[in-house]
Image (cartoon, rainbow, N blue to C red; front, side, top):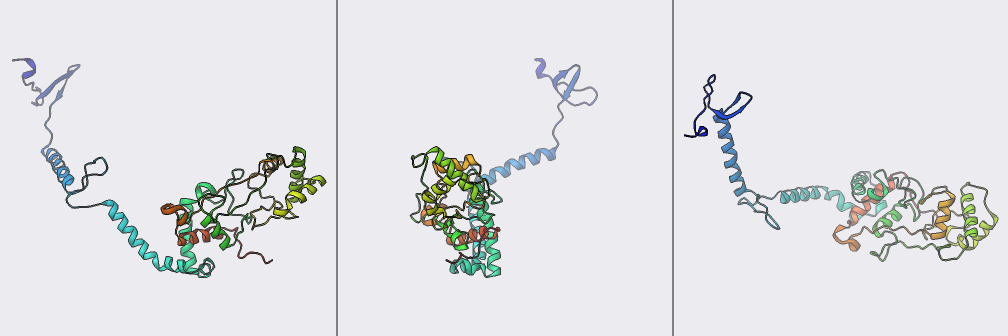
Length: 303
């Protein structure tokens, strides 16, 4: 009989060994406790039963359904449906009322702002930042200040969110186009520098430039106004408040005049975006949230 076929019993404990030895130390082949073995066998039996009763084995495009027909996704959808139904006492009213009427109802406004904050975090914070402060020099506006290119009333903000800016998905997107004064050779480099000096002087940055003022009057005032305070209807920014979307250094202002700016914002209505869009109620909610951040105005100025 070969040595490995013989049992090797430890002299001290009387327990069979595994016949493995390291430096004179032998490994005991101590049997597992019965309770441990029974538990192990029980888990195997439970696993087999589970794979029959519940979804378990992955297939190419799905998984085995299980005889009980349980679906965690269906359970989640059911919970969402129940939650949506519970919220309908508020969302139905928001859908029926104008955005200003919602703002005048304290209870609805509280609900709308809470929902709007969640919507903003999901869909808007990637560009405007989690705190809505935007990213200067990258063209993502700060929504906390009181500087609005297209107007800061609730209606104006709602329209901007609904249709977006300079996008190709929505026919009603806000649209304006600044001439590329340098790239299209409308003005020379020295003229652009003079205009930049004048523009900076409008907000108290620099002493100004007479030639730049004349060029501004001829080429820029039609949109930005004689005093440079902008025009919401045309999407022309206020140049006199020292708030700059793409940076306010002389170099950045010259760059803006030379190449122009044309930031794009997508529309968020369902008609333009389909399933990835926001409902009318959700658009009102996020518009009310943005308006409440501190920079929104109550109404458009009277003409």
